[in-house]
Image (cartoon, rainbow, N blue to C red):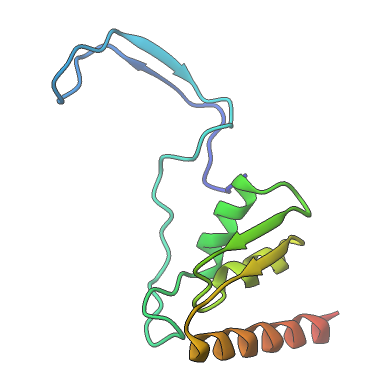
Amino acid sequence: MPKTHNLDKSVTRTAQPSHTGFVRASTYVDDGLRLARSVIKHPSIRGGISRTEKPVPVVADLIAYGCPPGGLVFDPFAGSASTLVAARDMGCRAIGVEIDPKQCEQAAARLAYSRDLTEGAS
């Protein structure tokens, strides 16, 4: 579960929402089975492998929420391999697909380099 998730949160809605339509007053108790509503803040990555590269800690929070320990993560747009690195770091298996051969090579190099760093730290 993401670090930013607060399981002791309950929300009571008594006013009508700003959108059209009527919604009755209700109470929602967060049981931990729903995504956190807060924004995960992390600096942008500039000059990375991909124009849309995501920071590994952001992806790791999402994997922790949506994938069981040791599960399989599938990323059909692997790009810079951030998702694959995060999955491996969390002990999950991962499959990544990328159409751009140059990005594939860079992603494979990133995975090999980060694996070498991980193995060297052991």
